[in-house]
Image (cartoon, rainbow, N blue to C red):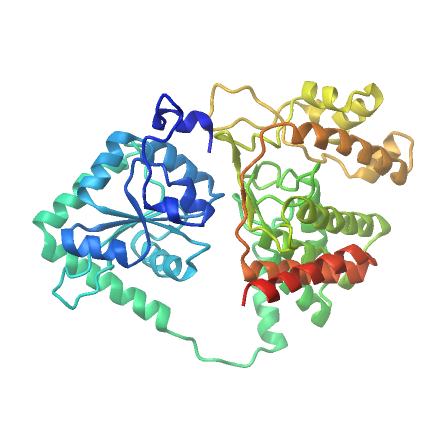
Length: 492
């Protein structure tokens, strides 16, 4: 969180004006909110007791530490002293880290989707207090849900203060209707989470039909599936690779090759530091949502490795696939690994309240970082810096436009056009990367969520083990072993 965002919440001597119960927590996300003027409580019996004793409904806010819109709502609403005063007077306010309590997140995300038809974070849910329906009523039933709510009315939607006032009045004056709605929604959530589909045998025909439906969404121009925003969906790529191995459909192979190439060349891939951002806001993989997640990168390493093993690739395609695997694994070992060898969970989308602040460049910044005219001119052409800016922060309209780095043409074509071999180009590229990365590391850095999540570590351990085996890289095997030892020693 930016110093500028917190400045009004500090005393003249630099101490915090407010400290709430989240200050005793260990979750990076909860600690981010420990000095909000909101009287936040962690999920637990103390908060439930307070809601029961006061009869106030609960405002439940669920998010995670690297969630961009969670930061926006914090700055706009939870750091606003007037809005916080209203929250504290009318509700018992609870914060949950969805990565720390996926069980709680699952329940209330189901309710949010049932009520609104969509979901996302921050999740904003209003719950009945325990005892609302009698002494034995456990409460915690959702009666209104949404995601990001702005501080002022926008696009015909109410502001957060309007929502707070409206729901508080409804609780006071229409409690029977509110509790009835909460009971109905709670029952719907129970039924949804409790149902299970009858099992049936999975056959080649079944998987072929699923692959056909997925291929119907294939973007033949840019790769990937569906429209913007476009997610990498590595599990779908892996499924299609399995299907291709079984049925040999060359249309599937072509779709996978195009998708992996365009993702690797786009701005969703961190061209300088390695690793993939969360998703692309456009259909071309150009402008990313800059958050980086461990489990995305683990699954994408697996997808590129599986393609290397399963598909017929040209020498150029194989070089790119293996280079992406190496650069992504190196990124995780360099920036997402703790002293024990276990892996951290995520890196933030914003730096000092600016989305992608660490990853964006102007041509002048790139030239200064490289400090070599010939290499700088190569970088201008290689990364599209000579084609004009391609990014403007939608939340900072006064900021000048800048560049997300991407590869407008394949590297082997650029090498041929410049009269050099691909290996010669890659050697120069490594020098450019070293210089630009060193300059980038001198900038303010995105926050890293240092939670160690066992399931995500399992994904990364498997990816590193397969990368080490496939590429003959003992250091990846060693890193996988060290991480596994850390999990088995410390987390059971």
